[in-house]
Length: 102
Image 1 (cartoon, helix red, strand yellow):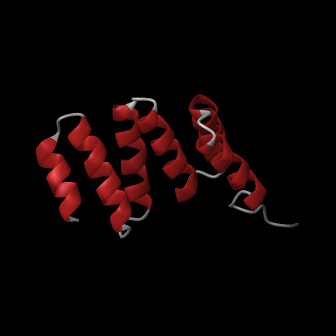
Image 2 (cartoon, helix red, strand yellow):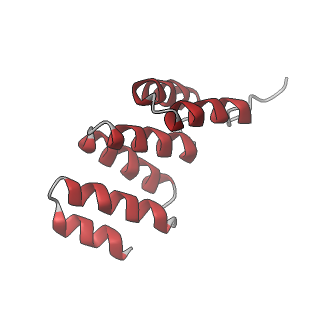
């Protein structure tokens, strides 16, 4: 029996990125959430989800998405920076500074 792949096909990721880049943010958010149900540890999906939420002004949801990414891989400096930006946007300055420093 063949083991199911734990990553989406590259064409699926490309389609999701096109939604985001085209400004179809609600669709990108919904698609990312649906794909995360199948691929729960895929950083690229959380990244597009978080960026889509941020661009729509859903900042607290974006914080949750970026924190989930960091729980999967805390070594990616860009994720700490992006989280810090969003935290600063919602007035969580101490948390933002802590995130920038990681």
